[in-house]
Length: 67
Image 1: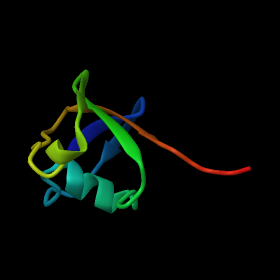
Image 2: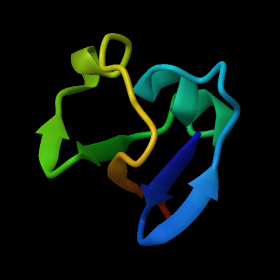
Image 3: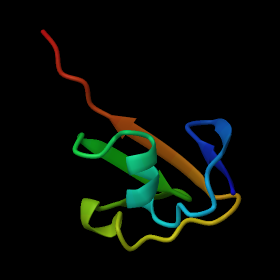
């Protein structure tokens, strides 16, 4: 499946079906992230139930601490 993630075309495994699974594959599980899926900002609770499809567009922002 091909997705547009943060402006870059990326091919992901066909077994990745939800936003939550995608975040796991990108090693972003447990991090503070904001996900925009097809121009809709998702609540964290929606990550496990939102099904992604070929050609979807995502913007993923994660926060990095530092000082």
